[in-house]
Picture 1 (tube, rainbow, N blue to C red):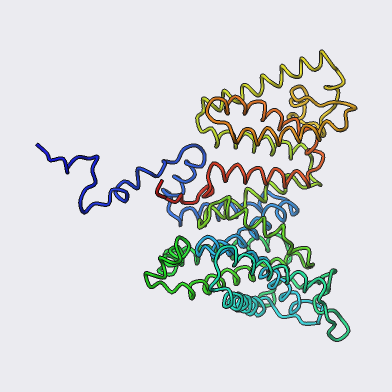
Picture 2 (spheres, rainbow, N blue to C red; picture 1 turned 135 degrees about the vertical axis):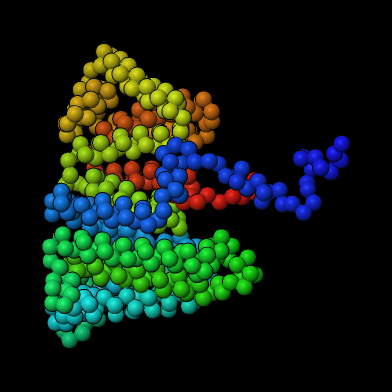
Length: 484
C-alpha cells in the first residue's frame, strides 16, 4: 500500500509540480488564431519565408501601377518598420515611443544628400549604408541616457524625442545659405531615385522587387539573431529585467543593442520611403504612423516575425479599402468581413457562431418589416453606393429618411451596448450579442460608410480592442504562463 506522501494530491519532494504541469495550463489553440499558430509552429521558418516571397513576387504580374504602390510597396514598408520596432519592443521589451523619429531621420538624411535641395546627389549605394549606420548611432545615443529607464519612464523620454524631431523639421528651421535646413512645412521635393552603379530604380515594379529583397534580407538576419545568444538574452530582458541581471545578463548593453538595431532598420526604411515617394514633409512622421506600426506588431504578435508580416498585410489592406478615393462598397465589404471574423474568433464554437449570425439576420428581417409597416419614413433611406452587398443590406438594415440625428443616437446606443456586453457572461452575453451586432450594422450604414477617413480608425480601434480581449499576445504571439 502506498503511503500518504505518495498521494497525487500532495506535493512531491524534489519535484516542481507547477513546472511539470506547465503544458497542461497552456490553453490549446482554438479557432482561426489557433490554426494560424499551429501552422506557424509546424511549418519551418525557411518555408514560411519562401511562401511569402513567392506569393509577393507575383504581385507586379497582375496588379496595376497604382495598386502595386498602395498594396505592395506600402505593405513592404510597413513590414520593414514593424521588424525594426519588433526588435526594440518584441525582443527586448522596451517601450519606445520615439521610433518614428528614426524613420524620419533616415528619410530626411537621404533627401538632403540625394536631391537638388543642396545639389548633392550621392548614389544610394553610398548614402544608404552611411544613413543606416548614422541612424543606428543616433539610436545608441538615445539609449545611453535611457538605459536605466523602464516602462512608462522610458516611454515618456522616447515620446519626447519623437515629438522633438517633428517640431525640429517643422518649425526649428534655421537657414543655411539662404534656404531652410529641412524645408520646414513644405519638406523636400524632387528626391533622387534609388541608384546603383548608375542604374536608377524608377518604375514601381523595380522599387517593389528591391524593397522585397531588402525585407527578405532583414527577415533572415533577424531570424538568426533571434535564435542566437543575443536573441535569447533579449527575451530574458523582456520577461524580467531584474531576473536577467541577477543571472549576469548584460542588461544595459542589450538595451543599447536593441535601440541601435531597431533604429538602423527604421533608417533603412526611411531611405527607401524618401526615394520611392520622391518628396517628404513633416506630416509623414506624425503620431498616427507610430500608432499604426505599434498596431502591426501587436496584432501579429509581439516577438513574432511572421506576425509582423501578417499584421502589416491586414492593416495596410484594411486602410486601403477604407481610403476616401475607393468605392464605399469596398469599405462595406471589409466592415462585415471584420465583424464576421471577430464573431468567429470570439465565439470559437461554430454552433454558437451559427446561432448568433442566424439571430442577427432574423432580427434584421423582422425589424425591417415591423418598422416599415409602422413608420415607413424610418426605412425610406438608401444605402451609400450599391453593389450586391449594398442591395442586400438595404432590405435588412433600418436606414431612415429625413431623420438626420438618428445616426448620432444610434452610435451612442452602440457604445452603451458594447460596454454592457463586457459586463455580461454566458448565455446572457450570447443573446445580447445579437442586437449589438445589428446595431453596429445600423451605425455603419447610417454614419461611418459616408466617412471612410473616420471609419478606418474606428474600425481599426475596434479590431484591436477585441483582439486584446480575446488574445492579448496577438494572433501569432506566445502566451505567457502565469501563476493563477
